[in-house]
Length: 188
View: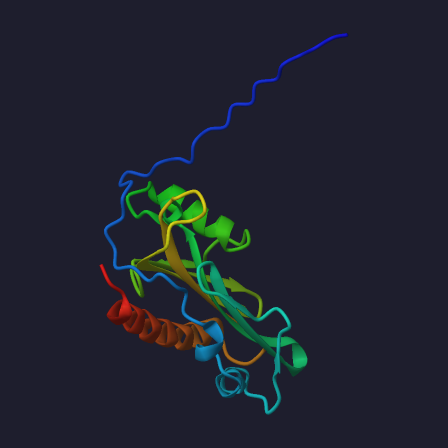
């Protein structure tokens, strides 16, 4: 009988330059479907009829997702998610920060990076799809391993109407209003 021992070494999650965030805090994710209503979805998509997704859900301490679709491949979604704070620590090397945004944004390189809304925002252009990912600067509850989290709001608008710039401008207006509201509600 041969017995062998395998040692598995698991590296700790990389600690960012600032291991304890000093940001306002929300303990629950905003409910995405209270922001993206059926009327709002119709307004974005420019259609009379929209369908809510079966994937719409609100899990307050993790995330909230609301998606509506319309004819012709049109869709709009708001996703508010608590992500690991270290991914978006602005003290990270800018190349690492951009890589983290690309990775969490589905692998598509960002088209642009902005200093607002939130502490940093990334815009993505992919054919008829415009996506805005906002790192809000609002801390969430610790994750299951006790690590700090960050509220990241992602807005997606897909359809043939409007240019990337027009869609992005509207998404930015919505995101600015949301971040201002959440900051007013957040405690230290």
